[in-house]
Image (cartoon, rainbow, N blue to C red; front, side, top):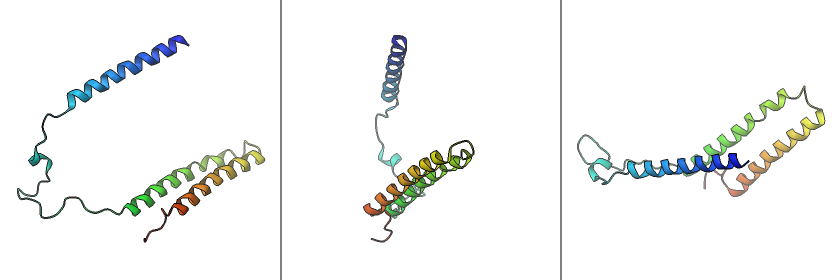
Length: 117
């Protein structure tokens, strides 16, 4: 156990030293306004280079991705149906679906699913 703790502390020490050295060496010393501005054929840009983005659309997309990943976690439940007891299968499935429904209810209650506000 001591050897494991010693190895972990040595690895943490070496990695923190490497991260701090790379952070110090990678910093640029000056920021040039011309290099950081967007380039548009040698002229100053007419409009803002950043387009407005709907935060509501982003939240709904993230919620969709989260629930999509959770649904893909349900797929292996079908494959273990033959090798597990039916009561365990339905218990685990119901518990997982309950977690999904509680998450959906929380998002709905917080107003994250309202498209128009």
